[in-house]
Image (cartoon, rainbow, N blue to C red; front, side, top):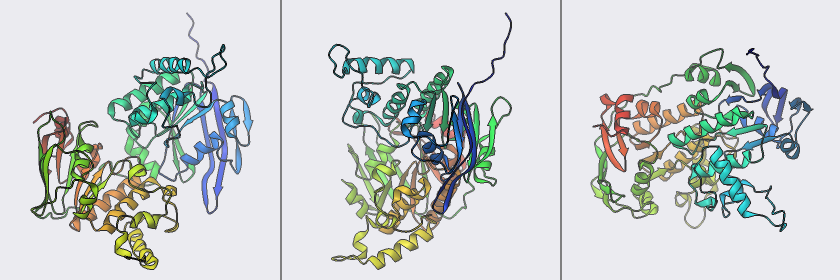
Length: 504
């Protein structure tokens, strides 16, 4: 049989696209192409222009100059209708589906299937087709379940299936695994590879460099609105550190170099905490000025333990002590009054008021400190400016709505909120999840400074470099129990992984 090399078919070609906003050039002569059956990764810091590019392709924005060619048709700009007609489907980070209807109904929302005999929407047909689509993608999903009752990862699968139901030529995935554990990330990567083998071109955007290296055939690095480089997996072998250097324009160490500072005496204690009947009680202590890392696979009980300490999750037993005093909170209000703060992983859901400005988000939990009967707006502005400068929060003004800030700056505002309240114990759950390399470094430096000033930090993280770099000690959670405690000189990848698996 004669071997023939088939020429790759280019389905998307973006040439010299520029997009300007008042005072900002979001994209500057940006070029990008995509072939049929290819996974093309797109990486860059927050603010590099990734979101702008997505919105240009989906028709939400129009470029100032440039052209977009898809399947042989060239356009100066796209509208949402034209983008859909040409086969472009986008799965955004934000949740835009309807919470009170089933997964199947959401998958076919706007393109409902009609019963040909009765001329009504056929829920049975939609459920059957949703099940078939999920099975084809290797996903186990209750498609008849109400959407808001699904886990975050299953909700993300619904969004992906909704896009696939439209039989796209180009599928754009914006941080598709942000809410996923390791197992579900693997499912998404396998699904993307299966989709590309069927001829769909996939644009894959992610902050996790290891993940994007695994899934992408090519990777384009975007910085300050420009394409810095495009790497082809067939031609070169690239490492996360090399890509990170290109993203931020300067060398970056994979492991943050933490400045060491002395720690004080034990001031915070969790004693015999029990939140699951089948698990043993948990006990640990934290020193003043210490960063205690909490490791473990997602689903091991890390976040539940944090919420139980904060009074936001049911406790079956146990007590919390601060400087020898029993302060066991039964609700978050009591926890805050005792000087405990919880920075959740989902800051956009339960950490910030996305429609309110920066200053209101900073002062929301400590509003009583700037006035009893009447608020002193001048005092609020002065204090907020101090925190913005101290934490290097990048915002045009205190009046800017928090939703317009980058993920890293949003995280800093959450920290500023709790510092403004005057808490001493910070429990942080996945503090740098979904933010870029440079913003991570700024958060790490901030944690180091807070610890040096005497704040005690309990840091839950899934990122190995983060745990190794920042932690003074690490406790490892497995099945809602402490499986291992690592002192500073014992902290390394091998010991952490051993703890995941239940090793002593």
